[in-house]
Amino acid sequence: MIIDWQQIDTVLLDMDGTLLDLHYDNYYWVEHLPKLYADKHDLSIDQAKRTITPILAAKYGQLEWYSTDYWSNEFDIDIATTKAAYDVAQKISFRPHAEKFLEFLNKSGKQVWMVTNAHRDVLTIKCDRLVLEPHFEHLISSHDFGFSKEQTHFWQALKDAFPFDPERSLFVDDSVPILRTAQDFGIKHLRAISHPDSQKPEKDTEEFLDMPMANLI
Ligand SMILES: [Mg+2]
Image 1: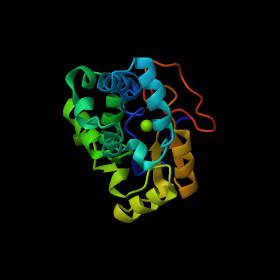
Image 2: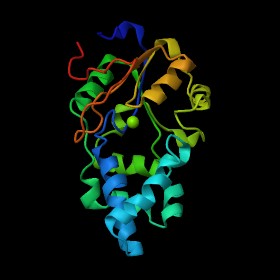
Image 3: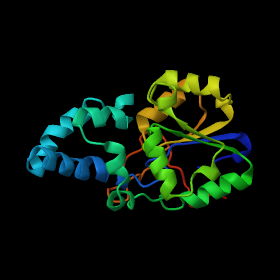
Image 4: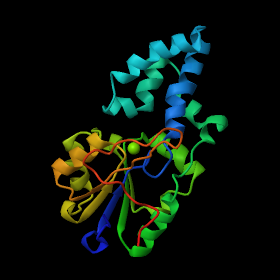
């Protein structure tokens, strides 16, 4: 279904998996961090994965899950520095048509805000690699408010800090639980991303329609 742009003043965009290929983040957490952990503790990669995976999973969807400080402490590995290392950071890239989508939004005169669960230092790593900042009125990290986007409190805190009309807003995210929270809060126009990681198969976006970035007009 085509989006009726006349009905929308504010566009809220997730970063990872929506504008940027989630492959970089998945690669870091699933492949690179276990390697670093294995080296540090003299384990095999498989042993490291078996140790790390349940520790990560226990915090899934919570603010800590997105916090580089939290995991640096937990694993005694500098997450921000190792995420910024050249061989890893070169995987940071836009999803297909994401830049075209941003240019379209900027030309259309909409308010365009990034709304991410990424920690500020990860946001900086990404802004250092790609031209992101000029496209946005605000770059919002949920860590600034102390709630993740999965929590209704986040949306209220966002609206208090930067007033917007949920009825006249479009929010795009690759996470179905986050889209549901935004819907419960009252954001009227919602779109999902069916292919957040270029190296993985498409996923089911359940009750949400896919955001067609390639065909905007
Ligand atoms: Mg995302």
